[in-house]
Every structure is written in C-alpha cells, then in structure tokens.
Length: 97
Image 1 (cartoon, one colour):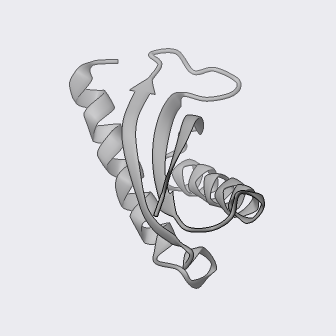
Image 2 (cartoon, helix red, strand yellow; image 1 turned 90 degrees about the vertical axis):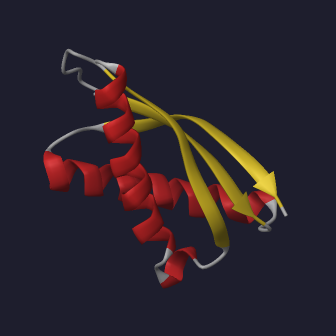
Image 3 (tube, helix red, strand yellow; image 1 turned 180 degrees about the horizontal axis):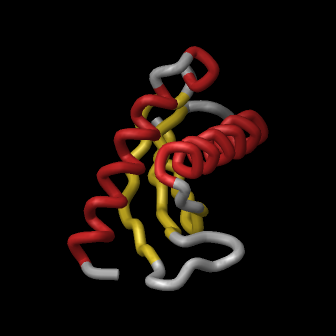
C-alpha cells in the first residue's frame, strides 16, 4: 500500500491501542507507541496489516507477557470488528521504566 495508507492505518491502530490502555485491565501499561504499520494490497489468511509496538511498563517479564498478549488479542478483535481488517504485531519492544 501507499505510504499515506500505511500512515492512516498506523494512526488508527494508535487510537485503538490508546483506548485499550485506558481500560482498568491494562493499568500497568504506561504507554504504547505504534511505530510502524504496513498493509498488504492482497488479503491474506493471517494479517492484512503488520505493525510494531513500543511498550512502556514497569511490569516484570513474566507478568508483562500475559498482559501484552491480551492487549494484542483485543486490538486484533477491535480492528476486525471496526473495519473488517486483520492485524498482527510483528515487533514488540519494551521500554522499561
């Protein structure tokens, strides 16, 4: 897709993730930055868009893995319900406080 389309998708994902981390279940996540999003021209079985997240949290590794997995699942469902588009995180980077 074009750079403009990828930027729009990045902004949409950022808005969605900002909403999710405002929920009580993600209170231990301080900040999430979607630092890239690439959308395929062709619909695939797995993901139409791949993205990367930089996550700021002070959670220990064992705890954060479950929380982040849950965040990814909810973001995937939200994108699918909102605009029938499958998304997958390919890069997750932690920025510990």
